[in-house]
Amino acid sequence: MLDGALKLLKELTEHDYKAYIVGGFVRDYLLGIDSQDVDIATNATPKEIKEIFSDVFLPTEDYGSVIVNKYGVRFEITTFRKEFNYQNHRRPDEIQYIDDLYQDLLRRDFTINTICIDENGEIVDFLGGRDDLERRLIRAVGDADERFEQDALRILRAIRFATVLNFQLDSEVVEAIRKHRGLLKELSFYRKKEELDKMFASGYADKGIDLLLEYHLDKTLELKNLSKVENTNSVIGIWSVLNVEDIYPFSNNEKELMANIRAVMTLNNLDPMALYEYGLYVNSVAGEMKGIDKKKITESYNRLTIHFRGDLAVTSEEIMECLQKKPGEYLSDIYEDIEKEVLYRRLPNEKQQLLTYIRKNFASSS
Image (cartoon, rainbow, N blue to C red; front, top):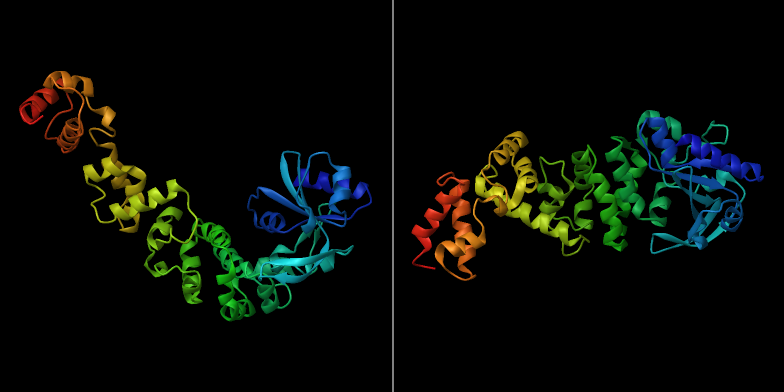
């Protein structure tokens, strides 16, 4: 990916523009972490970039960024700029294109995100970001109060970077978080959830949760159950405990999973019926939070005599023929009964024995 990015820089510099790889890709590259996207900073304007590259998408031209897909990589190319008059503590109301990389870096959030790579593959570090990487420190560019007042999402980004990278927060950043945490109320729940998802998906999710609690962001973020989260590496498991589907955005599938996880928290996750009705994943997430070994849950699930209704050795047609009845609600009652009998091994999953059982127990009532 770096080779492709350097080629793109060469194309820009060959057209007499300045260009640098900047931000998360450089940070992760120096830490030995794979990145998916690459951010490029340049003094070329979006219209000038469009004249150089054919595959250009201009999603936010007024904001000074374009997307270029090349060499199998998605590049976001942003023109050097200054930003003015931030609206709603989130986005600048005005930008001004400039010709100076250093001035462009001064508008960014944290020093570890200001390290650059030039077209020769050399590191360019004006603001001490590499030292902060080595110190494993999240430090704001310039004044932390100003950074957070400009863009309140940076408060959550600070916590997220400290969590995902297992870094420490600079004391000035901590003080600014405490001072400006109320600004998080002005952010959309969609944006807040994006940051929280990344935090909860981290291998250090417990650290992120501890930081949110330490700085009382749980109240600002309306995560009243955050202190109840424990023993889980599952993002959906964490959200199921938080129980905030009424305010945070989730898909219908996510909502169903969370409801099911909460339901099986009250059940025995090694019980055949619980495993059959809710499945391995839901029981594994709930079991993990209750301290049950996932291996035991998996073994119990694999030992089930049936995993789906279709695994039963009789069909609806065979049941109707056995009872000489037309379709009706009674079929559901029969299925529920024989599922339980088979799961608890009181009845073998064998056609003739199932039909004999059904004839004996349901012939008169159905």
